[in-house]
Image (cartoon, rainbow, N blue to C red; front, side, top):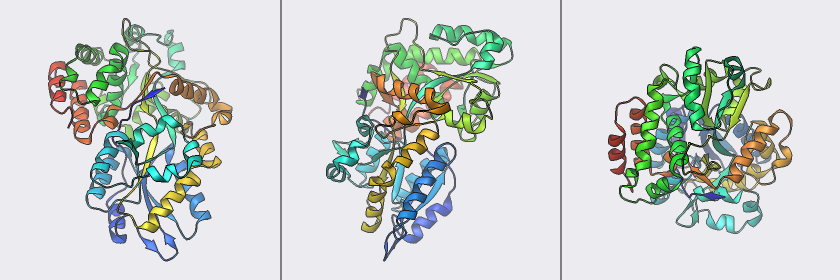
Amino acid sequence: MKRRTLLTLSAGAAAGAALAACGNDGPGGSSSSGGGSASYWSLSGEPGEPVRKAAIDRFNKANPNSKITPTFFQNDAYKPKIKTALGANQAPTLIWGWGGGGLKSYVEAGQVEDLTDFFAKDAALKGKILPGSFGAATVNGKIYAMPVETVQPIVLYYNKKIFEQVGVSAPQSYGDILDLIPKFNAKGIAPFSLAGQSRWTNMMWLEFMLDRNAGSEVFDNVFAGKAGAWSDPAVLDMLTKVQDLVKANAFQKGFASTAADTNADQALLYTGKAAMMVHGSWSYGIQKANGGSFVKDGGLGWMNFPPIDGGKGDPSNTVGNPGQYLSISSKATDADKETAKKFFSTTLVDDEEKAGWVKSGGVPVLTNSESLFTGDEAQFLKDMSSISANAKTFAQSWDQALSPTAAEVLLDNIAKLFQLQVSPQQWVDNMNGVIGK
């Protein structure tokens, strides 16, 4: 399985008090005579927050003199919070992220600890983590983050009951998707739910459509910093197709003001107001937690994004997150760093951690998890594991792969593309301007 060494960050809201709390204790949190008291920033909400809290509770119970103090943020609010904290030398001890371009920027600024020797000295620890997940944790051949939590491919979800109601079948090709759009619109059902306000949700469409149309090479050239790489004809074709979807009312009315942080896009699918949705594997846990009996009653369907007719891309390819990542602030005290490393080598790889992520509807980034794929989630987990393992290319999300500077321009232009505020050629010109930055 080919996994690119890519990245950036994403996360959410709880706020100024958290930054103040870190600042009051000094960089990386407080230290005490009994050991480090590490601070930890991560994302709030289902399905991940309960599993993260449970891990911290287990660790704190076993290590009363070396406790971890968490603060949870909504996805979109986390980005500026963590960036500001790092720049002010007030970062938490444990920094949650997605690896890749964002991690690279931290490394270049000397803000995170080099963990290469830590993993080299503990081969058993490294062996408990899927090997492919280390790509996005590696910068210039050195490891700066621990892969944690879950493998998260992006998939196409659909509401089986709505498909039955309209009398249509799940799409097997992009041509089928185009045929379904007017049929759902005629019934007053949005063909696709999309949280357009959040921008990164729109990006998933571009990632799949470029890959299915042209294969992974085009974005590989962008990531490699090749001048003018976005000018490939396949990019213009992909951008035109996306705007054609908008013009055909493929997404719900007002999609540009729908936010992912509120799970409003998820609700449109499980309430039957939308027929389909392109989203990450974590969506399963949200649908299960918030959708009543929708998932339990078999209302949710899923598949890898279908091939584009005549496209060059391998239909086994996927995009998303090969894992999530925890780094250790280089500004933390030695005691806090040791607490963080103990958390890495014990709680984050124990059986309860593995079981917790499976129960949440996720495929753990830890090895030998398949025996836990039982019960109602078994088929979904097996399918997500299969998509991840069989993908010839598992591409990390573009905004995570690129530098923070290029990623922000990317997300801004994607929003404008979906709102028909830039032409495909303008989009290409704007993006070529930040290649390699």
